[in-house]
Image (cartoon, rainbow over all chains, first blue to last red; front, top):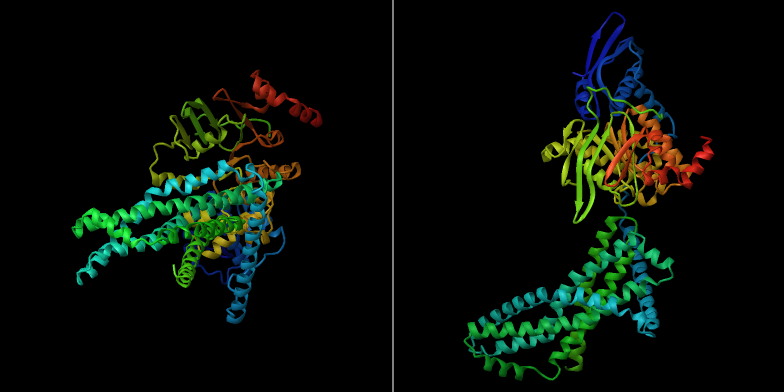
Length: 371
Length: 264
């Protein structure tokens, strides 16, 4: 109902009507789709009945007129041609020729893709090493004075990454220990060796589970926070502002986070250990009817001189890996919010991977050292 | 340009704000603020920092619910609209934000197409052509269409934001500090572009601005937010208002220098 076309002796007479606006373009297209210009000598257009013509409508009208002209039709306006039509004409004729959109699909070339991938990885490893070097150099300088260690900032990060994480770390340590204890109790009961549930729980929690679980939770929790916070600061030009005021961003942003996490993670690990051992006691008491005193005695004999320290010593190393990779990825953010999301994901995935890799290396080293 | 566009008595004003109250905690930002914008005029909102210009804009756009008063856009009360009606109504106006607020992960042309995808059913070639038309209309080159916001200069960001605001051919345009951060030459070019578009597309424009040049060049009427209310008048009228802030604003050193240069 946007056009009315009549054939006259000379050719066609087109009356435009209704609202030629963006929202109606689909309907206008549908109406004009079946129309055939063939053989029409002249086209007389009347716009008197148009209720509304917006820029999109004018663009569609221009397209219509171009089609008609291409079919060799003479165009005459009965009413004055709309001003917007001229605006569209002017806009599209100015400002250079059309530019084809850059094609996003590149040809698939496996060899060069592999090569590029390797190069990107090598470059990434180099800049990562560069970052670690800078952090080491800056921390060397910062250690010279108490003020440059930024104790207040460090305290804030200990609070954010450590104290606020206590509830979730405790809950997960409790639940995982219950699961481990339950499964081992089921198995060991067949041999009448329920008492060794205590050894399994004690050694498992102290050497591996406590620290590994805590590190993974913290990597997800604080690693993502570090990367997102630094990334947003980077997008907001806050990092540039720091640099411009002669402040080293690594000193004020990265070092306090690294220091804070290196202090907080071992403490969290101790909490996770304590909760894990408590969970073991609870399960043994209710499921195996084992008195608490017996649990404690068995636990004491299971703990060797190094059992506890072998677990806790890993915590600062994991903390270093998490904080460094998260800060590094955060500071890599550039240009867009999509990068922020991508690099936050990379930060978390990478820090969890590094924690597990480091744990595997620790296991081999401790085995070789026979501790 | 300096004459106020008058709306006939029977015509509904484009925007009507009555007795608006906005409070944040104990801080009262607006207390019984009235504002009327007629169809087809360019209305400038002026006020000191923290006087609630942006809050007023957000309230009119339906992004902030006021504590009291009512907002009518084209005669329809905003608070009374359902979620769905409000969504449809958002196609009736275009907005540019202070920092541009272009979506940083999309190219310029994708930014312009986003409102079209949301509100219109168009084929991909039509959408591309219309987006490119809008991009050229605001004076950007077609090669800029495939750039990301981070690759654009400040002036280009403002223009791209304007192209996005015009994506749906809205009759109503809101601009938050359209020329802030631009050099005087780019700002003047932007003002000229805006006036051309306003006249050719018959837009109603509401803009927040601190730029006296922009006010003198573009606005039919000015609303000044002082003491939590709005004083509205033509440019010549408001400049005679005895309120100290208005006197300082229009007759301060900056403004006088401007007047002297213009020879008025």
